[in-house]
Image (tube, rainbow, N blue to C red; front, side, top):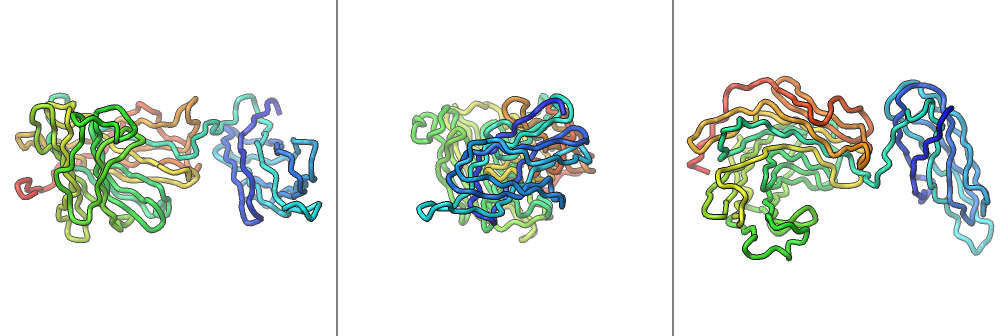
Length: 391
């Protein structure tokens, strides 16, 4: 035991039914000793503390008005490197006076004696969400992009992972895709940024406005902020897992310093008929030709980063103003996980046949790729059939 690592927790159990799981990543197997650091409390309590789902569980008693803040729990054996968690469950809490409400003390941190120096990794940042992952599609350098077509499939294993955004049609001025917003609601999305830099849409000057031109049936629209600002649209739609959905984004026109963008979706429920999401004019546009910087991402927009997120992306194509189709089969991988800013290692990407995939969160799988690496999927070789004159 050479070095102690302190994993910050700062959580209080509300009841005996609540369980805390504190994840960490030892890079080799071996024995480690665990301590709990608590904030003294006016009432006494007991915890049950274990490693993962092991049957080895220690009972830890914390007296009322404890003068000690650090309590040794015991030793655990790490049988394999990778993510593990310390599991803390309330066993009981006791009043010492009728004037007090029994409660658990705040757990400030978990201290772990490392097996070797610097060999334990864990998230030191304030970010609880899973890291975002991105596929940045490689477009032939001389291609002018008028239309951008993609497909997405979300596997069943992540159907209950809420606060998930599986973006399919990202570009320099906007994005589209599918979301799981809560246990009951799912959405199709299409939004356009204003190029005026602000997180408050009310601050956008009229010359930088993003104006709604049209939208589809039952599509909601409005402003958005907090990540830049602009115009947002979404359709509440009960999309299904293990099902392929199609998305199409287009540059409808470019005139002066304005560009008009349009987004569509198609689903198997009506034999992949195209439906309008929305159409927006972006003033003070930054393009004089067409789409730039095409990408997709997996994002967890809540704090449930212990859930797992995954999607498959395929059949990416662009269409030039002259009607030429170009298949996009290579992508550069990037992620928001960072050694200083967001220390997460449960992310990855790759190709399975003619599909790209990305995953993050859940502390299930360690990264299988480095940021900046390129991925190539198998070519489909045949582009979709779309009559653009009927859209």
